[in-house]
Image 1: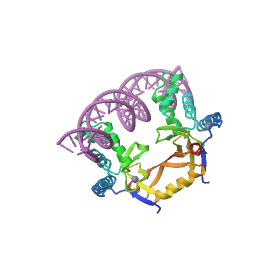
Image 2 (image 1 turned 60 degrees about the vertical axis):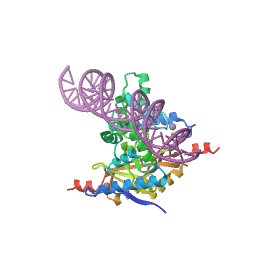
Image 3 (image 1 turned 30 degrees about the vertical axis):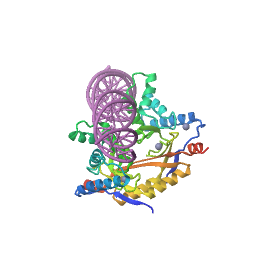
Image 4 (image 1 turned 135 degrees about the vertical axis):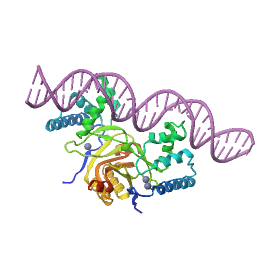
Length: 166
Length: 166
DNA sequence: ACTGTTATGTTATAATGTAACATTTGTAGC
DNA sequence: GCTACAAATGTTACATTATAACATAACAGT
Ligand SMILES: [Zn+2]
Ligand SMILES: [Zn+2]
Ligand SMILES: [Zn+2]
Ligand SMILES: [Zn+2]
């Protein structure tokens, strides 16, 4: 079955983000339970912080938050938690921003394609086999075997464009 | 006319790289002449260093080289030159590596698609409208207007795969 | 309880990139 | 050539992002 999903669409400012957050945590808990992994308090807290919004979050911003409740927190605290979450596909790194964002569909581990709005900073995540297949096809032409992919597209989301045209 | 070019294919280890380098410099000189821009000694030297190979080069490695001939060189020396070269499309930044690589076709300014070999580190650059159009099509579905794109694919090039299978 | 593994604490440092202001160099008009 | 302006470089300091290395603590199976 071919995937062609808009995993995380751009959300209207009015959406009930609490639900996104809760759902993400509950999916993560389930995932870790099934895989026999530990979603420790630190890891869960970092995941919650990444899911504070639909904008990519910086590691040191997470660190600043952690410090508020536990002043002993240090960079490794954050990076270790992020490494775990990345490894398990619960978050993605946006390489062009050095920032991290919650995955819209961690059930099925993948590298997404990201559309990032210059104005509002929001990100939509796609997991699209048509894109993947095309890249595959191109790679094949010169004997390249794909192992990892990064697709980050910047531009302007619908909402922001409509705002500007008013 | 639709572009579908393998701008910089993977090169055999045996290729005459001196030619790649010379050609890149001469194209850059021409470009700057036409545009009324100055390819100053620093800028040219940085471009040469970026073109030392077909592997992405790190800013601080460039800096180390610059220091060998001019010990007063500092980070801004490099980043300014890189900014100029990026601006003029003479080099690209590989975001997922924080590294820079010479552009295979600066005549026609673009964001390429990059295929990076995990083993040898070499990069092939594509400038392919089919990929661009597909991303465009996907973006359109949710009203996203593309302005900038980053496609960086990691894997194994033909040469390295053949080596492993021996 | 013993033991090996995993996770966290802690300190230090590496790697990447930018701000701000001074100085020099190039350019164009006079 | 002189002047004035703009572009490029020098210089110092600092900001941001990430990792190394080693110590301690928490956990899981026996
Ligand atoms: Zn939400
Ligand atoms: Zn995802
Ligand atoms: Zn070459
Ligand atoms: Zn290019």
